[in-house]
Image (cartoon, rainbow, N blue to C red; front, side, top):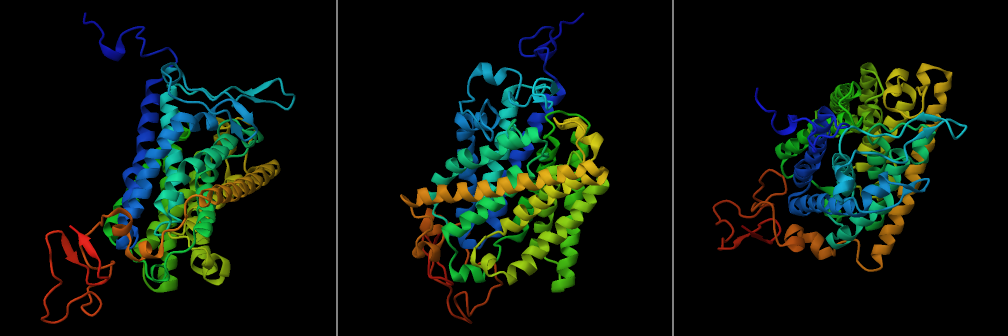
Length: 491
């Protein structure tokens, strides 16, 4: 008889009795999928959806945020979001670096839920069947993508030094509040609010804080606001594809187990995204006469953001409903309402994060309050007998709770983001200088994405340099003169 090897030996110290290898493998896979949404997904998307002169800066803002959030997360952030209670909306910060802590069973100490008498346990403490290291990393990827989504509101003008200071401060004083309140055992968690995978914690927070940051940082140059073509539509689609497919880990990993809720959430996620993309595209064709690739990506994104707060607690037909509304209501807010609102036009939200994430995330949270199915809720929620308003009169209470939770997240993000930026402004200008804004990447980083003349336009000899039989711009060993702007582009 052969001797069992590796992970299959009896009583192996690396395989404690509580470990479920399937849950552990899926959680690490899901975390990797979410990580790929940001790195390289959003790095590629941001680099290609902006004007050519901002490709490097936009990609770098995402790249820096991904790295900085990880270090801040393990030093203090994780345990502020999922540790021992300090305040009803905040936990005690501490490092998540010790071997004993990371190899022990994952647990969220404040998630034990009691009945109204305060002594009888309604739901025990949430303890997934995998190590704490998997939980720390999984939720790092959530924190990172939230920060990168926020960055979409301030691309093409926020000072990189101000961004470097902003990332850790916003993570600690803003993101962790929503995460603990709704997921880590805070007051909204125990009140029974549903945010299955981040409609409020991630999308509403990123959209509201991004819009607030855009207000305080100030607008792009007028020329950039008037014309801001993507520099590479095909590469943009590659980034969007990574974002969409990575969402299977985003919502599929939220139950913290490879249980029946996980594949349902994955299916609902894709149904909503596809429906929303088709609805958005249909509206573009009906209203503008032609389909837009950028519009399709925006529709995809709103469908994903909208279904996120309820992906594991709604039926598949409800995901279609969410997709239809996600493809139409944010479209209306962006294409119609935005153009009629002086305030919305005043705030320069570069990638319309307010519409694609705040509006869509809020919409999804409210629809979850209507469509949450009772038996699905019982699988993952701490409060028993939770159901949406469509499943009984008492379900209307959940809808009201969803409204109150949204108002809390909106209010906290506006105030906290404002205070953080005002504090940074005392030491660092929030906006780049006009000279840097005119030049772009070469002025900020000394690098450019492409040694080309255009900004995504078709070549026009009258606008882009030489004409007729005239010689092309003079080439040197280090680069050539950009005919459009007279800027040296390094090769």
